[in-house]
Length: 320
Image 1: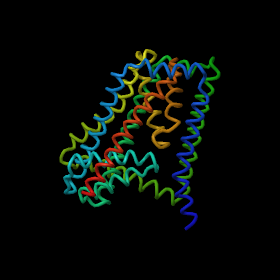
Image 2: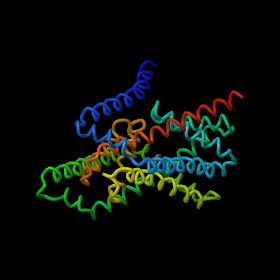
Image 3: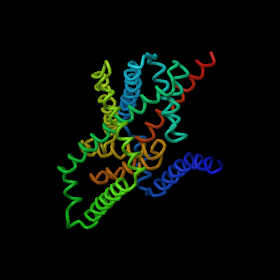
Image 4: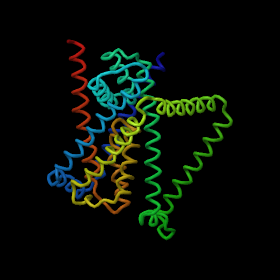
C-alpha cells in the first residue's frame, strides 16, 4: 500500500520536477544576447498576430468540445455544448497539475453536469485520443516528406558535415535498435504480446466506431479543423516577429511536431517546449529563442484563463 502511494506521488512530482529543472536549464543557458532579444521581442511583437493566434486556439478548443457531442450522440446522450466545453477546458487545466488526469476529470465533470455515465464518457475520450494519435502520425509523415525535399535535410545528411551527419545517424541507429528490441520483446513475452494486441484491437474498434456514427463527416471535418488550428496558431504566432515572419512551412510543421511531443511528455510542455522549438528553428538558421518562449507563455496563459474560468463556472453551477 505504501509502495503504491509512493508511486502515485512520484507520478505527480517527477514530471513537474523535470519540467521545473528543464525550465531552469533553458533559462540559465540563455546568453545575454538571447535575454535581451527575448525582452525586445516582448516589446516589439505585433500583438495583433498573437491575439489572432489565441482566437484560433480558442476556436480549436471549442471545436473539440463540439466534436465530442458526435461521439456521445450514438450512446443516447445530448449534452449542452457549454457543459462539454467547460469539461474539456477544465481537463486541460488539471493536466497541468496531475499528468494525464485531465481525461478522467473531463469524463467526471460531464457526469456531474449532464449525468453521462463516467465509463461511457471516458470511452468516447479514449476514441478521441486514438484519432488524435492517427492525426499526429499523419502530420509527422507529411513533415518528414517535406524535410527530405529541403536544403536543411541535405545539409544534415551531408557526409562532409560530420557533426550534423553523425548526430542524425546516431538517432536513426538508436531508433532502429529500439524498434528491433521492441519487436523481440513482443514476440518473446506472451503477456506483453497480449497487452499490445489488446491495445491495437481497441485502436481499431475506436477507428471503426467513427464510421458508424450518424454525423461522421461532421466529425471528420472538425477533426481536420482542430488540427489545422493547432498548426495555424503556430504559424500565425510566427508572423508577430520580424525574425520568424518568413518561416518556411516545413519549419512550422517541424516546430509543431516537437511542441506536441513536448506537451505529451511533460505537463503543458514545461521547460522542454521552448528548448525543442528553439532547437528545430536553429536547423533552419532561425536563431530566435524568444519565439519558443513567447508561444509557450501565450498558449499556457490562455489555457490557465479559460481552464480556471470553466472550473469556476462548473463549481458555481453545482453549488447553485
